[in-house]
Structures are given as C-alpha cells and as structure tokens.
Image (cartoon, rainbow, N blue to C red):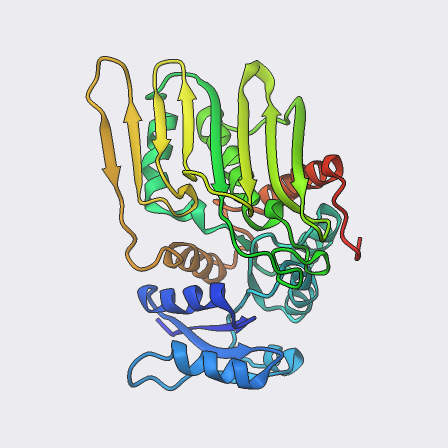
Length: 338
C-alpha cells in the first residue's frame, strides 16, 4: 500500500499530538507543514521528525501546498476562527480535510462547508477524536445491550484553569475563544453519541437551558447547561476555563450507571455498576497517544472514496454547532466576525 501523505496547517500544541500519532497509523506520513511563521514551522518540523527521518517540508503558501499531486489529506489545527478559510480552499482544490473541532464557530459557516464538500465530493471530517477511542467501543456495547436498562440521563464536566490571557485563543473573541467551543463541544458531542447508542438516534431537545460567566473579553469562561429530551431524559454539563472538576462522564439508566471516571474526552477506562452485581471495570489504553484512531478512520474513508465518516458524519457537526449557537445566544456571546 502506498504511503498516505498528510499536510498539516497550524503547527501548534494540538498539531504536535497529531504528528506524534502518525507513526502508530499504518502508511501515514507527514510530508508538509504550513505555518504563517516560517521559522516556527521549521522548528516544529524538526521536532516531529522521527529518528533518521527527514523532517516534513515547510511551506508558507496554501495554494502551493494544494497543488502538490501527492497530497492525500490536510489536517487543520489553527485557531477556531481561522478554520473556515483553510477548509474552504482545501475542499475547492479537491483535497480531503480533517479539521480540529469545532469545524467552524457557527452553524451557518459549517453548512456552507458541508455543502461544498458534497458538491465537490471531497472528504471532510471534524476531528472529534473521542468518538473513536477504544473505551467507547466498550461503552457502546453496554448501551446497545441495555446493560443499565433504559436511559435516564447524563452528567459531564470538563473544566481547567489556565492563566487569563486576553490575546490567547481561549479568551480572544476574534479567535472564537470561550469554554464552550474549546471544550464544551466534548460534553455536547458525547451527549449526542450516548443518545444514539442508547436510543438509536439523538432526538431534538425539547429545551436547552444555559447559564454562565463571561470573561473580561466577553467570551464564555464558564457554562452550565441542561438539555431536556423527550421521555424525561436530561443531559447536564459544565465546562469552564476558570476552575477544576473531575472531568468525568456519568450515564444513568433504570438499572445501573456507566461511569467514565476522569477526563472523559481522552478516556482509557470505563466502569459499569449495577446493584447486586460485581462492578465491571474495563481499561483500554491507547495504542499511541489516542489520535491514531481518528487518523486511521479518516484515511480509510479517503481511500474508500467516502466524503464523510459514519462515526463523525457531517450531520453531527451541524447538530452540535446548532446547540452551541443557541447556548451562546442565551449567554450573550457573539464574535466580531458574525
């Protein structure tokens, strides 16, 4: 099988994890790195090159990169507000795209990109790596076999406490900062995923209720929300960049509980608890650093000529962004480019 040639746009921290995962994916090779700062991109390229392997080539012009005939797919890891333009150019050039979450900051932008991907018949996937982790294969089995009985509700948290920096991607409204888009997306996408496994589909919520605290820059620094679904099922979540939590996921059923105890977005362990039965604790460590599963899934889709992933399809990106648009509306968060 010929190598699968990747390019990377946005040589930052998340991109380092992507590059580090490539050796754990059969055939995957990083051939190009594109960054606005050529010196920084060159430093990144040297850091991610394996022993005895030449570093990926640094480019500073996207049009030149997209003219490379050997390029199979582009991974985009720039700040949220910058995703859209890069995704659009890649799709227009017929190059497959794996783009960090959120795909773009709002539903309207995402709808235009999905339409373009379908018109051009080019693969596009939002990089929600959590859905591809081995732990969730186990959880999927428990939910589908109704090991905890009918679903009753979910609770999740994702909170951390970085220093405030008005110009950082987390707090700058021009970069589409805020806790919701940066980390709350995990609470919401996994709410949808759990509902799909337990019910066969995620129904539209009857209501979404959100409250929060805004940072001095006007973006959300803490969000607490509750989504109410038909049948009395609720999903409660909190995401924040001003505090700490256990960052776990709890799924409640009529006859038991499934718990992902810590850091549910990068889970390596899940627990099934039912009264009167032994606890089932499953550990599923990563083969590499965890990103390898979404990368190999994307590669398989591209090689099969597919334009979307069955695990993370376009419809999921659009539905989650619609929820986030509504939550930001309730909080009064609006970006300068909207």
